[in-house]
Image 1 (cartoon, rainbow, N blue to C red):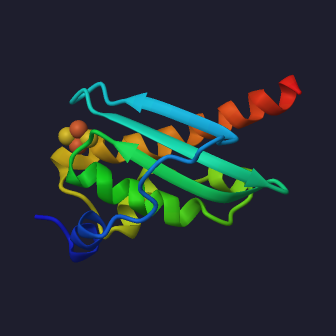
Image 2 (cartoon, rainbow, N blue to C red):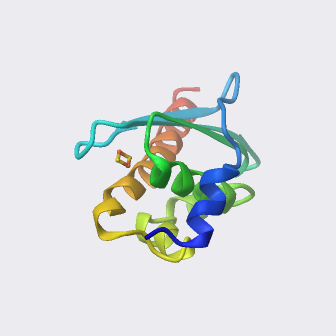
Length: 124
Ligand code: FES
């Protein structure tokens, strides 16, 4: 039911945790299951220098978040905003249809963290 890639990220999730003094942070809840995801980012020269996630989500949420952190690291802010839930699920080789909603958390939390970063910047 899960691809090998999903299982691999679930068993060895990358970038778990929370960045202290993050430049941006985004927390989102999943309306379907009530699970929660938090992403924190560190930005340098308009690039995502570091990114970490914490979740109360399921295995699919863990795998998609792990994948999103790998995709976003090193990208510019504009490039990171282009990461969609669908891209993440595709890179993982797909998710079971009833688990697609889990993939929304990761990209949404990333986008929210970027919004937070931008609003902090404009407030400076
Ligand atoms: Fe809630 Fe997957 S069941 S994130």
